[in-house]
Length: 267
Image 1 (spheres, rainbow, N blue to C red):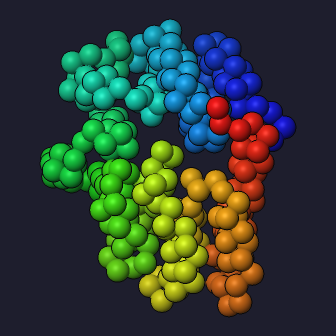
Image 2 (image 1 turned 90 degrees about the horizontal axis):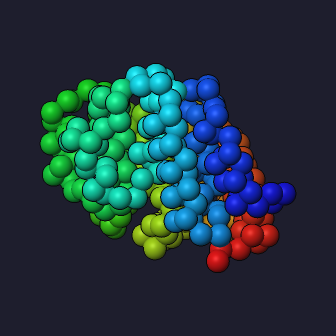
């Protein structure tokens, strides 16, 4: 909590317009979206600032460049206007140099899912239209991101092993499940994570144990009670060592997020 998220956003707005490295955009913008905006005093305003910054870079970058593409990916991820997202998905309104390929199509669909502006039928149709391995992973991410109880239960069946899926689909379901703004749907899964994680050794093995522990950790539950439960899980006798290592790291991350919340509380 050494710096206010608002100050980070100020730096982002100044730095991104003159950034000439696509790698810098590719890594910095997702970090800002995942770890800065949710902890800002007003997350909605923070998201809009990131969107506008990324959108400006899309317009100023060389058409068709990897820098422009990285900026457009960030613009999609920060978007909150379903009409804007739909215009990109259909290809009606696109910046010069941008073409909607499989990656961008699913990026838009995942964002529409987070916003509750798509449904299972549309996601299934998109998967059936291009049934690639990448599509299956992103379909899993989108399905778990939908803002309803059914979506969270769908994801949890994959965590517990009730439904067996390939590793990348499993990870996508976990990362899609925990979305800021959907805490009312996921809060019950904090206790279930603590209760169900140790038993996942009966359903998977090796590095998949750690991957699932990471992907399904309750990152959006930034609460003292969640921190206490995570610390108790670390101390649980017999917990698989690879899972314990992940829980230690994620608990440290949660503790840092809590420190930011305490120092710079939401408005």
